[in-house]
Length: 155
Image (cartoon, rainbow, N blue to C red; front, side, top):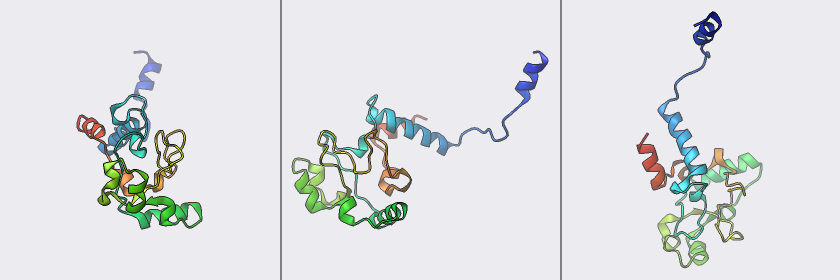
């Protein structure tokens, strides 16, 4: 090894480190959810949409805290009805979906009913990115589909 190569190999970035297990989990989760959601290549944010599935992500266990975070973030007060769907409304919106007939899944995040091909969460952008990612409800922070659970087990 000549002298310049030796000097380069001896230089280490001052804050270089091996990623922690939590960092690896976060990276794999982000990659899987934005590019390979539910094991479908090219699929993004499947848990943030209903599409043709009999699916509901809920219940939102921290609705008051989520409303406070949204209100603080945007500098305005959000109402419960603006952000959430309760059982009575949800069962009427999706009478053919068993999950939406199950009271224990409520409150649920409001979906965009004007986009019936996927029925995305009202906070999901057209690019399938979460517009409230840093302030999202706890279920959105912790939800793992079966595919993601299997992927994370194999790390």
